[in-house]
Image (cartoon, helix red, strand yellow):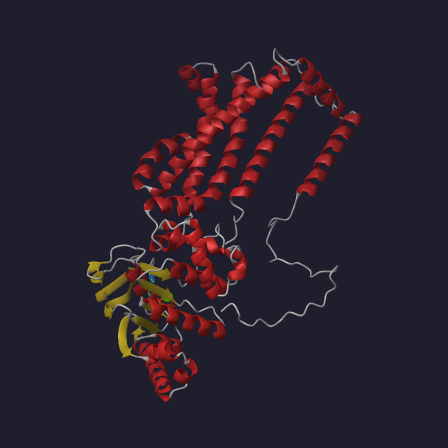
Length: 284
Length: 263
Ligand SMILES: Nc1ncnc2c1ncn2[C@@H]1O[C@H](COP(=O)(O)OP(=O)(O)OP(=O)(O)O)[C@@H](O)[C@H]1O
Ligand SMILES: [Mg+2]
């Protein structure tokens, strides 16, 4: 049947002109690039900042100039700050968040999938999860410190708890999004329960799971910095905290910029993973 | 033998009404039988197919395949769905190979068998395309190739050619007949085209809606004749074919009028 006669398309366009390539009109952003717009906005904000400090609208103590912040960054990178080098501060924060993210991902995805698939798992695990996850992590940080001490364990546990819920809930939502026709089709092609899970359930839930991971990393950064502000002697959050005690606004700005850069890099990494694992997201 | 004995299905709609989608339907599909179901939209054809496939339990009655009651879906009953159910993360050839993958066939063998099938359904050039890059009829053909690749004893096909142009449709019909004649598969086939039903079926059943029942049944041999002679035009233009077509058409219209009178 490969010989079905197609009405032959007459190619009249010159080779160098080539046909105009088109695609379905989208709705909303639908994949069009936003990078240039964002870049221009970033530049505009820095310009505005510079203008405001230049005009002296706000005292320098409250709002340092961009140059101040850059100079301060150079100084911190050279000499360190508050008893540790810049690298040690960044490493401390990254270590905490990455360890916690690793744990949260490894535990929350199977638990969430299980809760999406099993009535018993859902019934039982819903109680603790629905109870704890609306709580602000800082509310139970004191408990963590009392139980687990002031060291790394309490902070990492706090982060794991904060990041667990979004991933677990998104994995559940991913399973819920599974159309029954897809399951039926696979079963009548002879899929075993295990094959059903790995070839149908998991890929169907994957886009939602990755969205959950992205949200979890965001939650992770805010929780981390808050935890470091309260109980730590290393980390970007700690740096900001010490600086604020000396009204060193420029150091606070350096700290904030560092967090922004790290969080942005994390977001970009997840987007990259999404592009690799679920290129079909949103198209069926 | 596939035996359907007094199968009834009653649904409850969300607003609390009950719908008798199937009412004591009895039907036997012998080995290498080709049963085609005709009937107005909503008369329970897909419901019957879902029950045979094992997707839907019966309210009462039994369905047995070679003596064993049908309890759940299985690879012995391949399904071509009315709405396509391709996996968006797999390209065309991997979608077609899904059943072979599940049964542990080697990768090379998967590719070999599926490439042949894709050639037959006219999609060789699209083997590496993703479902969202295909037209409705192309997706439908992928679904057909997927069911055939798994090589089930029984094929359940829900309006498989509904989205195809008439030429492709005829080619697909003839291909299906050749597969059926060669392998002796049992086929349950749903369509809205009387002509298609007559051409393909060894048995044609006509159903009426709410409650879903079989109101007429025809035993035919056009398809066997075609399998022997290969001359479809001669069959489709024969007087016998045309008079049966008119008879069934009248029956379908009659069932329709009957319903409007009783409502
Ligand atoms: N899940 C369901 N819940 C409630 N009613 C249903 C359900 N599925 C089907 N029905 C009802 O059962 C009847 C038969 O539906 P079915 O899908 O079998 O029709 P059909 O003959 O395949 O129609 P078509 O030719 O349009 O595909 C319809 O009246 C429909 O409303
Ligand atoms: Mg139907």
